[in-house]
Image (cartoon, rainbow, N blue to C red; front, side, top):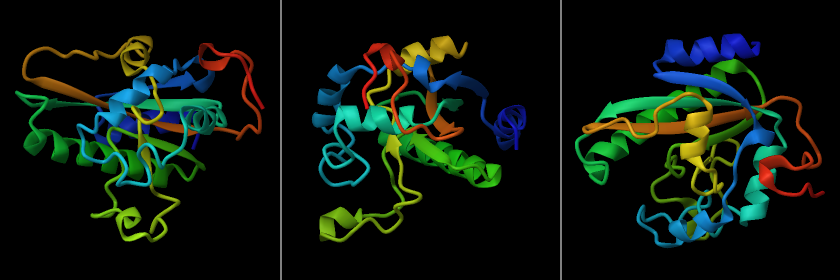
Length: 193
């Protein structure tokens, strides 16, 4: 499946918008990591895909930059209060399910970056001291990667703030020929091996 077919599939599956970007153009903001430490989502330290267990900021950045291209996907939901988990949790779950479906149907290897932390198991095996049950399907969220989502949305021509009563969620599928080193200057920082 080529890139145009991948983008068309995203729209066919029900994403409101989909756009292709170079991962080297993504903006990573390490100062976002303390937001995860505030644990507003309740997954800090109890989910393999979330900080601190998912990896350092640099390790997470490296995971994304190993893939040269990314398909950014957006869904929009009629949600009055974005802090109301009873509304946002099912919407994020549906968004992530669509992202996984796209990846599975694409037949391409790559990396899923979700709209929220991995929710494949409840509870995560980490709380039982066991290894991840689905290491090939587990995914971390944009926040865990410290990706500047507002900037990414603007780069893709997508609304980040959709107005009263509408909430947007974003995910990415990073793909292409996997790189073994960081591209020079990617994400606004020096390259590193």
